Length: 272
Image (cartoon, rainbow, N blue to C red; front, side, top):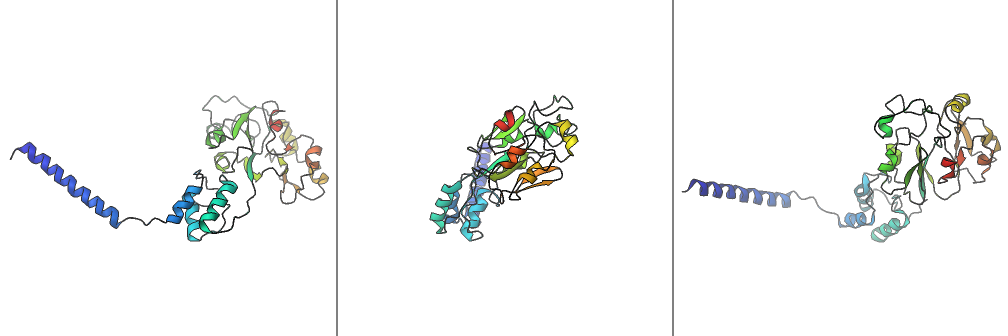
């Protein structure tokens, strides 16, 4: 037999046997597909952010279909629409969900924050922080290089005058920005509730804070004294507002001497 023809036939036979083997293996070793899981998965937006507490959309869909959770409102990006669609498939009740938004706890823009060095490296917060904690004198301040903006799948984040700002109308509270911020300046708060937030994370004493940023919380306690419902406290020289106690009266913001308390989403807090 011609050696070339023999080689072709041999390779073809090996390929045929291998193909048949893979076909049999795919049937024998196939993982059963839960149709309910697949239907639920189609209702989810696919952000795979993990805000639901499970390993992405697949994990949440599996948990709902197998009874690991009965809460249909855990998907923040999907919101009410996703909860209703899931309830229709599973027969569960539509769980109540509170709209949330992420907020950057810093308003140290170019005008208020002092720089201790000139950074000329890669435009990344994670990289800049490696150089003596970043260019800003405030060790807690937003570096403004946009790691959170690049991570956001909903284009809800912009950099305004050197500080990240999150648009609550676009934010889906997926928490991807929370995870990527190297300064841990971002948290998720109730949306459209009128509850103010302290846009500062500096935990130094007041005098040191003032030297680094004129918009930083100095822990003066005025907000604590002005609040009639006990919603404000000062922890490690930085004010904090409890959304569970806050009644949105705005007295704390009005009395703040450095004006670092604002309603989340107010761009004026960054650029004024």
